[in-house]
Length: 263
Image (cartoon, rainbow, N blue to C red):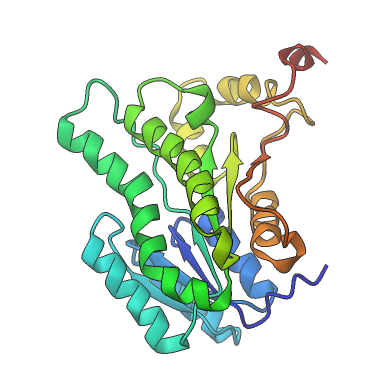
């Protein structure tokens, strides 16, 4: 399906994760659709991603940015505007499940909120004038932790709960501007970071099997490609009358009857 994303300037935060991460996969899928991916992340591996895309003839830039620093976020957005003169879509994807629970300090908790929630607000705020001109779309990447809890990760859970709230709030705020705002909610996705975590557990494969057995559809984790495909659909004109929605790409993990676990 042609999503009509060719030459659309799409900002993706948290875009320089490990190869095969959700952000990197979204960027790669955008490039395949002919879009102009703008990578915003603090990790310098983004420079390699930019070069790789450019070498393939893809118009793309990486802007190294600490997403906890408001001034750096503003500078990044201004660089996008200076280079391309417009912003057609924003995917707020940055996020780290950092384990900031009751055992953490106040500063640790606040840092988690800055990275996982406040960065969404600031990036959107600075990009908004251009999004209003293009009648663009905003997609927030959320997590099942906001709805199910997980334990020992208060900062991340609070931030992702806030992302759900902001999605609905912004959809209301921006309805007259014809800017659509949605949230893509992820549960268990097989990313490099997840694999690293499993590999570090003494009984990792047993834990992995137990997790997969709790995912109703096909007893497997969601792939980053499945997430990326849905993300692109949600920012495209193919979903032109969808706004204020929490869209779950999770194999039924969050909502389907637990009795399905035994099916």
